[in-house]
Image (cartoon, rainbow over all chains, first blue to last red; front, side):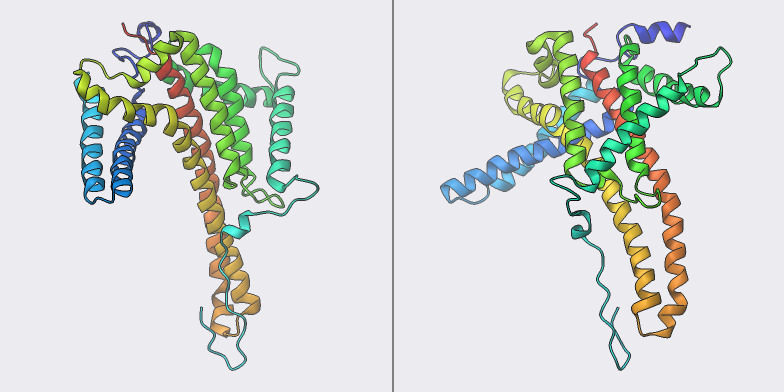
Length: 79
Length: 259
């Protein structure tokens, strides 16, 4: 009954805004990681293709991966 | 599988994507379309039968219906959604039953095609789920509030937010239904392909191949086909469960409050 009550108080106990319940967290983290790499890698690739440059795609991929990992840290470790 | 005999038999053509492009039966209606309709009818009829004459001591049908409902209610909805889970149990139960029946079509004799192995079908299903949890989120937080909890990481400087918010937007709002459908599609597609490979391969070894060795070995291919049919039954149940569990968790996510 006690457990029932703590659950009723806004999702699982201690869950923060926008935070997924445990089994979905893994899928969300993976999704964040792929999103960051795809988004910034894609922007880098577009910059390379538009201005006939090189290297922005690599920079974009790295920035995207780093940003995703920081986002996962913010959402699931720090909070 | 190269032919070694003097009169070469035609080579084995492995099953591929073209085996999933089923021809229309009449008009634009294909086998997956009929299966979807059939699955809906089966689900409705079974649940109607289960609650036709509800009794305090449930009969067999009522017991099965109540058990099914109980699994969704207690081990999916309550854990994933938390407060106010009860309102979503009918949707989740129907979703689970519908996906389960469609998946099991993959191993039911004479039907033998899992509906969600056709790529268009799981996308439509994920779209329904996306509309539901987006609507629930907007109703609970308002449009701005829903966007904020989905894309606004707390306690970071503005220049970090410029980088992180597009990632969360892409991940939470656009890619979520895509990954949901791809997971179901990929599992059903691969499983059906695996069964096709073992059964068609066994048939080829038995009837078409020249080598007597292949004919002798063909029962093992059929045996593997049967083993993997049972394995597929397991995968089909698990994937239906995961789809519904993730749907419930997305609803739980958009309902989560600040306090």
